[in-house]
Image (cartoon, rainbow, N blue to C red; front, side, top):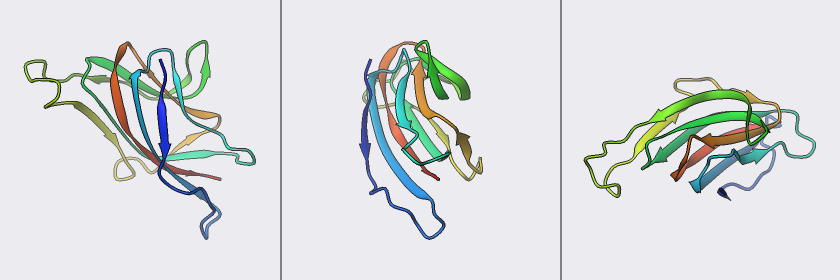
Length: 132
């Protein structure tokens, strides 16, 4: 139960005072809640503009704000049922959930972005947004 997070941008303020982030993440087991991004020092809000979640497991995935007792304090997105076609080899098809600014303006997080799953299974994806 661990998450690997790779930051794909250099955190620095843009002209609007926002600090953008772009993250790639992967985990073999998100159950028990894993922290994707914590509130940086001096920031007051995290805004998630896009998240893409993929898995080859038949699990549910929840995106939450903050962590309490190995679960998200507040469910923000989900639980998302990630059903993949079990008749297809796992290396050929994955269940994918996409939430982006085309569908949602932005989602506000006040503590941290937490990912949680109903069980073990490889999960990977990207998350983009900014904090102020």
